[in-house]
Length: 419
Ligand code: HAM
Image 1 (cartoon, rainbow, N blue to C red):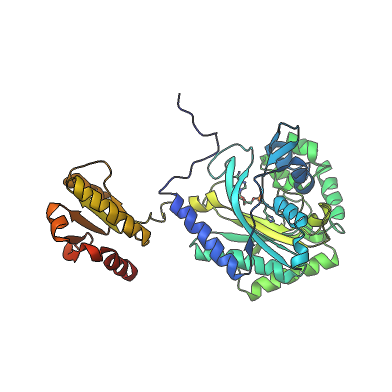
Image 2 (tube, rainbow, N blue to C red):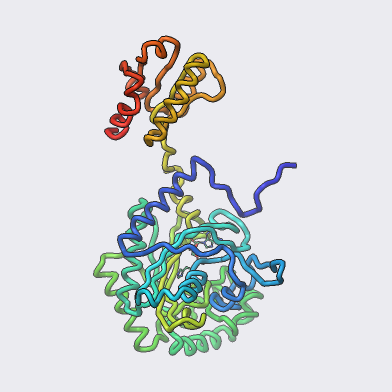
């Protein structure tokens, strides 16, 4: 029996991959304008890294990690997200010694053992960005402006930015307790998961999709009513800076995010085009995370975009695969040999050249040139080899011109650079 890919892990095939390349290239281009450098970290990390950063009582750590022991009995985990590995690399390589402000971006696969459905996979891809070393709310607004700019560049506008503040270690305990007190009175209507975790992680209850949990928390206390003075001021300034940059947003006080490292600003870019998987990008501030991983006491903020969700939103609007610039058709083995040499000269000059490798008839070769949407076609036969002159067909205009074979590369260079 043929072997299939693992459930929830997808191949990205030609025809789709061009859209992926477009999304990645735009990210590199936009992020670089904001001073970000790329960082690449391993796909596997020590399990402890994720337990300590994402939080023991989160869904990710409790249920969704691909964790295994290697042959030396080390517990390893396929990264479920990119922030913790980037912080680990930041600390290990002492990047703060090189620059007090580090702006890093990454792209690559992440792994979560979730129930696969449209927009939710077990191997999925994120494009993420992190800024380490700045506490000022200016940087929150700058990061969100970059995210907004990126979505403009890729032509996706059916998204809304929602922001919230989750407070800090000063004010969060107060809010936590207020929420626990509130939930205690409604325990009977909460789902089994929330009944179990309402003490250890009460904020998660606000994010639970179970109808009972949603209905019974409609009047839950708002985190925004429990912010300390400095968190309130920070959040007010984030909003002010966003307004100054004309970045549209709304405040969603119920947004709690699924990872424990967040403090103060959190945000999601949501859409109504993807059913229940409505977040296309998300992130927030994680002051304290670097220190909790035994690094220096530095602030941090970042986001990650779900690439599969972007591709779904692009829908039929796919980026076309590049077409060959020229197809070299030939009759007879000597002409095929010449076509082969010419093709390789063209390719070395950066021109997309194709030929027939299967010994097909001239008619079949021209059919293939058409199917590939080749821009030009050249037919080589005995006579062309003798005279060194051939017809170059413009397949779009249905016109042709005589050319010297010795000048083909130069001519094609000129034609390709002008089109
Ligand atoms: P997250 O909210 O867990 O945050 O994931 C960010 C985005 O990744 C989501 O909004 C979604 O688009 C995509 N995503 C998550 N899980 C899946 C899945 N199973 N299938 C497809 N797409 C998915 C983080 O990962 C944080 N590290 C973001 C961050 C960076 N915070 C600060 N810096």
